[in-house]
Image (cartoon, rainbow, N blue to C red; front, side, top):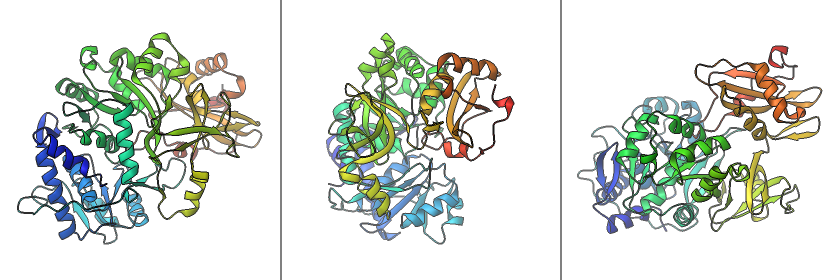
Length: 512
């Protein structure tokens, strides 16, 4: 079943409902949207020679045309390769080769950059006025594909190594769509999805259940994620749902425009892509009430591993239930989740191990990486590389296996230390990593960002840590930054932070 049928079916059912909105301006209804996609498909085949099974990359800023071309690729039986617009053109060029893309579609603000690096690969500009006019172009018939045919090559973030292309099938993404509608929220033609994150990542994936139900896709006029504009759009689009990483959620909740009355009318505030601090969830529930959903997923099983449902989240925030607020909830529908040891033996409640997942959303494998695929999909389960534990069916995510710090033989989970650091009133953002250490193997290093207008007292911060955690877990080194490096999905680039470290002992000024 071709994913493009999500749009064609909605076009038959609600042809006159808004499909794509820029700010508050309706750009196309579902009938018009489906027709434009079918004509874009003709352009892909006749102008660019795209055939079923061809990989077509998209390196573009969020724009109305993005969704049209994404679905048009599926319409002709192609494989979409959405690439983060945060990547450097040379990184894009590497992934074009890696994915064996036959065409790169780009937005006008970056087309020349990719042309200079693409090595002769055709580059199409998706938002050039007149260049992609669908007038006079005949619509293409919908290509028939199978459940297991690849639909999306999702490149991992590369925060701990070279990105790998996770092959997601039409069946994987259809299962993700159904799971969303089954256990996240009801969606219909009165709903909308506000695209704040990258369409190449979670925002584009979350579009699918909304397309399936004939809900509008709303793109900010600024094409950015400005909190003031977000609140304006929430006022204009009741029942709007939006996805944010934790850092943006914090800014939206704290903005002067925040209104509980407006917040009560939204669909759902979806937060994910990085661990969320309990204090931030309490603040979000304070504004949005029973509308906050915290999900855990990976590109290898898109947006679908576990979640804290909205009602449970609101109750935990009200009662101060830190066990729930620190968790990533319960396994999603049709998804099995286990915590295992290094022999894949299932561990009992309370014991820490690797999180593994099985279900219809789990990828086919990594493109052209048989060894990595065999390692990740051992014994029929996706080995996530994440460390966690279960407590009565509720999963707590502790760390990435590569982010855990082993100091003097003791395991230290970076998230545990980060939660203590963020409690300090002058700290607004934090990341903890391990640095090589000749004596201890690794030492705990903290990168902290001061709240606006504040100056951090590192001695006071260190005393706070000593008062709140075991001494061996406390950071041995502190670095104050203006901001933390993040990728387009909002994840902190810990490899970038580690690259600045050495095996040398820390400067005493950094180790109070």
